[in-house]
Length: 298
Length: 246
Ligand SMILES: Nc1ncnc2c1ncn2[C@@H]1O[C@H](COP(=O)(O)OP(=O)(O)OP(=O)(O)O)[C@@H](O)[C@H]1O
Ligand SMILES: [Mg+2]
Image 1 (cartoon, rainbow over the protein chains, first blue to last red):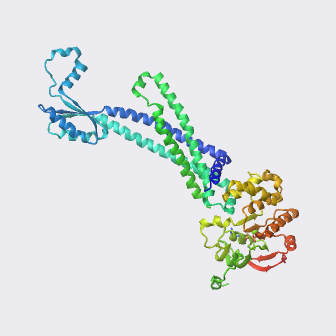
Image 2 (cartoon, rainbow over the protein chains, first blue to last red; image 1 turned 120 degrees about the vertical axis):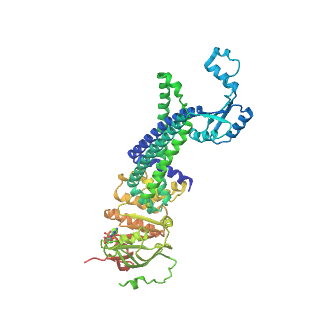
Image 3 (cartoon, rainbow over the protein chains, first blue to last red; image 1 turned 180 degrees about the horizontal axis):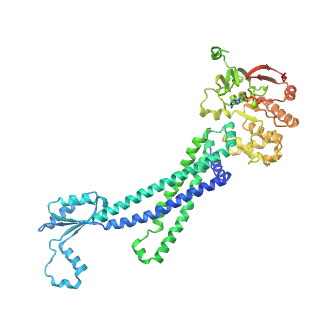
């Protein structure tokens, strides 16, 4: 394709937008609405995931050992457990450290009365998981080790968190798929409308000897342009909504904000910008391409 | 006519200067009698041919077959060496670039001006911009529209609109000009102007085929006249006349 034909095609794509203004605006508005909702969902979900992840990182399994187990034996178990995929980190807490921690946390100044360590057998391993849903398997395994006396875990937290995580993933996935289908349907309508409005022109082009590509390309360009506009507009709006929301929560609910700990807008937008653009362009391309194939028999 | 006779292929070598060849061409639409029924026709490069006949005699069907808008039900059509029954879909655009086409209803782009309508034809065949800027004014001068290049289509008379359509058909220098009732919507003066322009184009070497109902012009111009009736050619004469129907 020649360079000036390339620009002609792009130019025609732009002109198509103007030729059926109202349909174009309707399509851009719907894609914008869809991607706006998507952006909001995305911001909420990433924040929620952030909260969940922080909580997950705090979930740990504590392994206690039989009386008389030596430090070497414990460290051997530690390195054995570290080889498991679901284990993120293991912290060894010696009996002395356990006692110091206990004193600090609960006894304060009253600890002077103890001459020896009452927690002599409380050396333990604190295991942090990379994936809380795999906690039961780890617990079963740890309990089967001979020197292990008991395993403390927080079953409820682990299953709830992984359950909530899955639920969010399914619900948001479902909503996003529906929004995308609606958008594709609308673009397809716009392009169909454009094709019917320009039937005569398309016929003339065919008589003159335009290739299929040359006839079809402007409609696909039109779809892609609608997709691009339809993704930039909501990105701008969501940006303002998000920053305002953070400010508002921070000023009105001081208590809550220390608990919730929002992600900064840059972190959210690092991924939201490319995802939204890709979705917008993808919807525009897919919607127009399939429509052109279906309705434009050239 | 029995099918056995019609299906017989005539092994005729197409002469080098023959640009249009129809051998026993039949075209049936889904309903009714065939619109063309076993038509055989040869046209040489540089000829000027009128096609006349009653309404419904198959003239437009013949033009559509030559454009490869329609495919024959039976028989062979060869235009400029392209076998139009076997031509691949992807080769049709390249084939059509050899044709200039003019219709009764002009078929111009009403949202663009005169210049753009003609330049459009060149853009479609991907002519470099530099050449478009040179070719369009020169062809507009040929059809006597040099002063109107900026006008909107709806500001032009019917005759002027048809001259724009003619310029568009000619700007890509076609080997064959096909016109289906080009003067059907024009008054006598404008009709003559269009016909004279087509004669001039023909004198420069383009093969011209004109479907028309204009008896006066056909009789005055002394060209080859093909007369059709009910899907068959009933008369084909050099310097022919418009045959009156009883
Ligand atoms: N798309 C179609 N479907 C079915 N029949 C058709 C179609 N187009 C034309 N016909 C029929 O084929 C026959 C020839 O039509 P055609 O248009 O070729 O006639 P014509 O000679 O151009 O007539 P006119 O002088 O009125 O333009 C007519 O009987 C017409 O009704
Ligand atoms: Mg006709």
